[in-house]
Image 1 (cartoon, protein in one colour):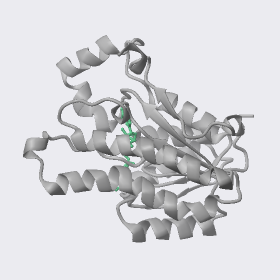
Image 2: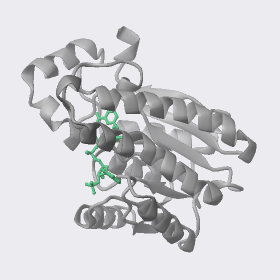
Image 3: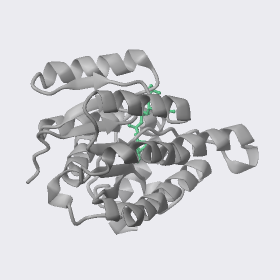
Image 4: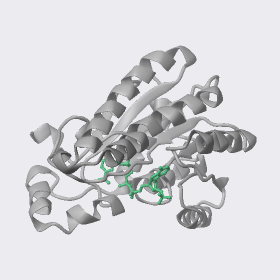
Length: 251
Ligand code: NAP
């Protein structure tokens, strides 16, 4: 039921962090992988690691900058030539922190362009490949899809929009047999969160408010993505699944 044998997955931003964790989880369940990132060096290292650990899977690296339509279109052509697509994971994301009163337009635009317009761009371009396969789309949401904290307004705005885009696409693409869901990680130990992990006050806040009393792991997010990518979730669409050690439940 959870087998992904014979499925091909494209994961944006999978050179490290949560994207790489999701890639490992999908490979464990049998999927072939199309890994992706902007920077070639990190991408090549991720491809090499996964080929070493999953020699029976076909694993290819496809550079893709989700802020460029040209780059997204080129990636889709490469994916098509490599055998098509069944599972799309929109994971690429950034978080540039600044209070709104000091925020230049460029920072706001870059955040929205990467974290929400990037998801729209990749989804739209991938649809022709996903149609007819009973495809799966998984979008990375966040606690900030529902709540907010100071200093990350564009991230919260973008992740709230990704939650709504996920629901909208679920309703539009049900006619094609495509399920669209979100995974919302809580506080997960990754590069993006290094500044938070080093901040004693914030780290204390996270420990007090996460009932599980620890940071989550990228594997724990990956396992949930693998469920949503599988036929076990064929009647699940438009949902945002929180992987947060109980954080949202305890608010
Ligand atoms: P990360 O460790 O910083 O990795 C980000 C990945 O995205 C890298 O592979 C990076 O590739 C890629 N990327 C950045 N800009 C890109 C662009 N314009 N086009 C394509 N790829 C791009 O991040 P993470 O912490 O794993 O987060 C991954 C996702 O989970 C994000 O959407 C984030 O918002 C979400 N999330 C994370 C947490 C958490 O606790 N970490 C919690 C909730 C949600 P390059 O190195 O080549 O740029």
